[in-house]
Length: 414
View 1 (cartoon, rainbow, N blue to C red):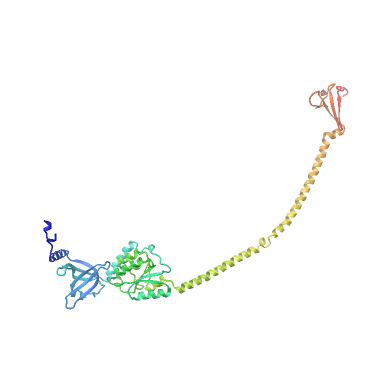
View 2: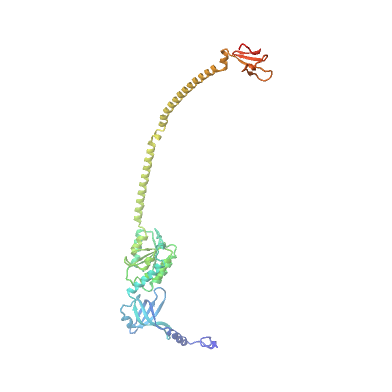
């Protein structure tokens, strides 16, 4: 049953008009909408009361076809030109005769400067909250880039200034130039594409995004969210040189380095040959002077050390002490001799006293030592008459020898 419905089988196809009418009916049900975008192309045909507009999304490669009464464009309070940011109110329509889709516009409002600035400020706060402006994420700019990627308008003053100044400062520097439109609805897609191409090139050391000054509307692409996020995703350092000193698009805050002007960008990323040579010469002079001063200081220290008596006359201290040692040795010998003599005298006196008090001297004066000699056992000194009864054998020692005797008993005369 379903296969017999029109358009459900090759045997029962829709005619072109059937599809066109149905599509027109579906689109007609969408109702009127407000749409914002940039005018990419505005066509006012002579003798025609209809204006044809191509409205482009600045953040994506998408566009819509618009039709509106001619008076809506010519009588607008702001001049409608390519690149103008507008808000339109219209109803989607499908023209069955040509099979095309367009938006029938009944009201056009230009986005004022105040609203643009407010939107940029809201986007700035959003990107800041996400950390895209964090200084810790900034990539360092190489001291001497071999190849500089340059994104700028074709034959622009910004390109001429950067190439001329950079080449004058360092003639060996090379450029990889990508020319894009730098304002209008096509600027963001072209700049993002060039940025990705240069970031993927391993020979490019730094990328410069450059444009001369302009109005707030002219610089809108450089405050676009898509471009800002693409800059943040780059692995190659990005330098923003947009407009003049007062201009401050959002890409300045996301980039790794913000230059006031394109000329300032060239000066900040390429060192000056003459200045670097002068710096090297000055550093060589300073290092040579520092080395000479160090050598002079060390020579002075060595001279001071050599002039000290311990090094200049190392034997003087020994010679001065040798006399003291000789005197000390003489005094020590004298004291030792005196001590030995005194002790010798004392020992002689003690020896004489011992000799006088000894048994030999006593015997020499006529005394004798009498010992009782038992038949067995050792002799004992006779201390009492009871120890020498009659018949006891005695041994009498005198100064020149000893004699033996026999006791006759106690002498009663005593």
